[in-house]
Image (cartoon, rainbow, N blue to C red; front, side):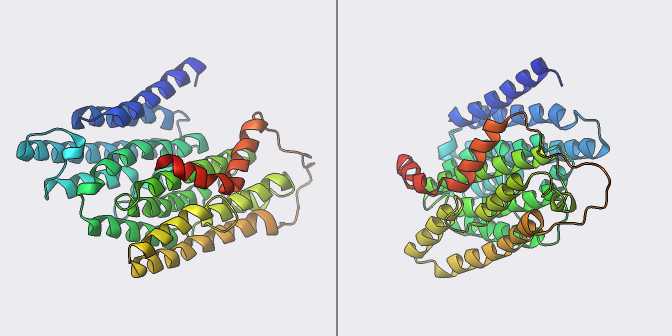
Length: 347
């Protein structure tokens, strides 16, 4: 893909997300979502692989269907209330429909089935955009309508997502599918706080984007998409494999890494809201995700396969952007001390 084409696509992607961010009208927000979807299709099918074409087809069908349902909910709410304002989504029938449409667009459980298959067919760069950037605009809409949504619906989406995200990643051998289930589980933590503490949702989303971005960058540097390939990467780059292990533990929420504070603050907020059962289920579901993170960490750092090939192993991994990778790895593992300051900015 030429630099001009790529710059036009990325600019259009940024424009679509920005339009949704600044919109107060449902129709303009819907236009921004559609623009972001249409931009992703040529980026997905750029490598002309059958899996890429299948992933692009699934992604287009899912996004088009969810956008149609979202527009139907906005139209029905406008018919009943006389307002197209996003914050005026208050009808008891159309508000849950809009919330489920946005959950479908993001890949929240139980409407998550498309996300692992789509990520499996994409390159690591495009997969990163689908797993992170494409969730920002729907999340902005969810935060605006969450105050009018029944809390049981948000709690059910959160519990389903964390449990299914943990269970689904247990038997995966493909790193992109594993990261897809990791995305589902993390979205569950965020959606749970959308109504009670939106600032915690923003902090959790920020840390997830930073850690996942560093993870995708490291995998791209190693050119690794399967666990068995990751297990043979230690001799190629021990330092980078160690960093991948730390980033996986950060995704799992182990202290003192970056991913610990959002989970801790969310559980603390659930306790303050007198929801001990929900907090317990979320903590137990996090253990499921932690299991496959530890499994992947073992393959990356503690497993050294016998070298039976005769070629000479390069002494280092070539990397065209060492500063970008180094900066993202540092943020993904060492941002814990500054997270309280970031949280104070969202208040």
